[in-house]
Length: 109
Image (cartoon, rainbow, N blue to C red; front, side):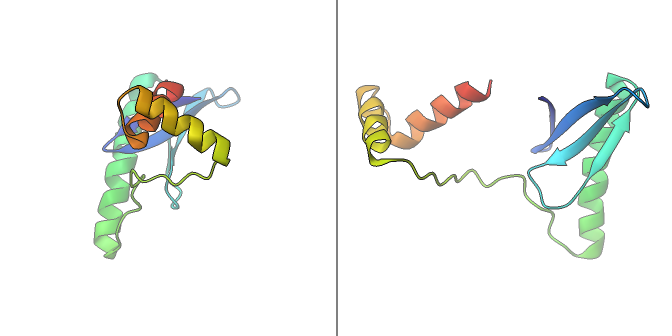
């Protein structure tokens, strides 16, 4: 997946071969915010403009903008996996949260 980041918001980007443009959409929020551009520079500018316009529209309407993510993640895993995670975290000298954050961050790259 191709993605972009601006002011804490992330966007998914795809190429539309029919229109010969890049098309993006902010992900991780309930509202639908899209943008497009013919070049990488246009796409980056359009993304920034889309986020800024979204935030301005929310302010003008007196609504709170959807936050991309809180940083809290609840996972349910089998007991055996939880035990293995706890052991791996303790072995590395980290809390489960620190260990899991590192593993998840590495997996996302």
